[in-house]
Image (cartoon, rainbow, N blue to C red):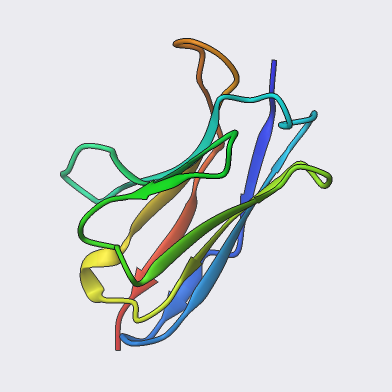
Length: 116
């Protein structure tokens, strides 16, 4: 079992930045991957960014060059740095842990609202 707690969401103006954090309740060192997903009202949950155990990462096309995912295995933390935010980035952002195979754990989500 892994408990995930997100933080860092909030209200930001278009063009602004936010940094989301996700703390895991146990070591993520051996996990296949950690990721961030988001779900906007009326839409399905979608992958935003994912980082695998070797350090490689992949991003949704809509956030490439604006968002950066990173992980700190020593602190059991995963981060999502979001720059040049747009109104269409407004969503609930969820941290995801994929320890192995098809096993996934989810955080409770943190709201990000981009609005002037």
